[in-house]
Length: 355
Ligand SMILES: C[S@@+](CC[C@H](N)C(=O)[O-])C[C@H]1O[C@@H](n2cnc3c(N)ncnc32)[C@H](O)[C@@H]1O
Image (cartoon, rainbow, N blue to C red):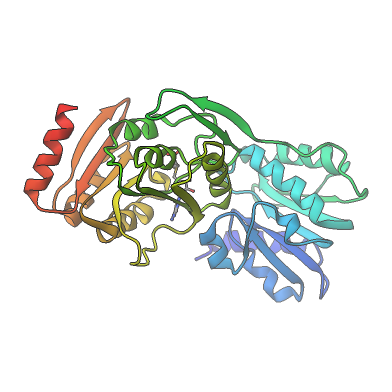
């Protein structure tokens, strides 16, 4: 439900463009969600997003390159998400420029304390112009017209590469991009989970919310005669994960975009691993735990890494009947639960304690 103040801000943003019936509009999202108020304008609107959940909600197109979805747009609207990485926002401003026809206008909104002035500065560098188009409360709006066919500066390249030598069956060559979780290196929570993953050679493993693919890549190499499935709701993350599987020649794994909260009942796994999106709270954690219980074969395990284990353990125990902390380090806790009887669980935990 959109609050009145926010709805007014969206309407003011759209009104600033003075749209005409039939205008081609690229909607790059308002905090990642579609600008529903564009529907009443008579413009031909295409909403492009990188997260499949937003695409489903807004009836949009999933893409990391919106300019390949919409060409010759009259207007582009964009309000970056508050938690968006700056480099990712810069990439989308470049994409907005490419998607516009000559004379077309980009509108960008944001708050001063959320970096909107640095975005305006970047727009100025790309378009050669940028002006204040309005203000609603703390929200500032900027606009820039595409006056030249080419941008005044080269598009940003946010890719970074590094090598991970100390992981099981390493080394792994990794490439990531701005906007993907822990893009500068392995997250310490993920590392803890990797170091307590017990994987058999024939296991079928699901990496729930794979990001650039750390857990899934290691799982695939450990399950040499098994398979790893990497899923993430974000197409940018999946593009990185696919690329990383390829550059490490991991053939018994595949990555795909999916809202992993939706369990289709078809696939079964021996192990589900996840460093879950904790900022989503129970909206992600509960479906993950409940879905895992159904998606695991008898004897199958769920392994999660979290920072405050108590509420997760509570829900795990409610669903699985048991669940333990397998390891703790630097404020992270790796949790494990197994589908099966309690004797199996005791045996499993005894083996882990010996390691
Ligand atoms: C904390 S990050 C962990 C990424 C990676 N596994 C790692 O350890 O580096 C959580 C990931 O879950 C993804 N995610 C969030 N909600 C999701 C959902 N409903 N379905 C699939 N992936 C989701 C996010 O896009 C993000 O990449």
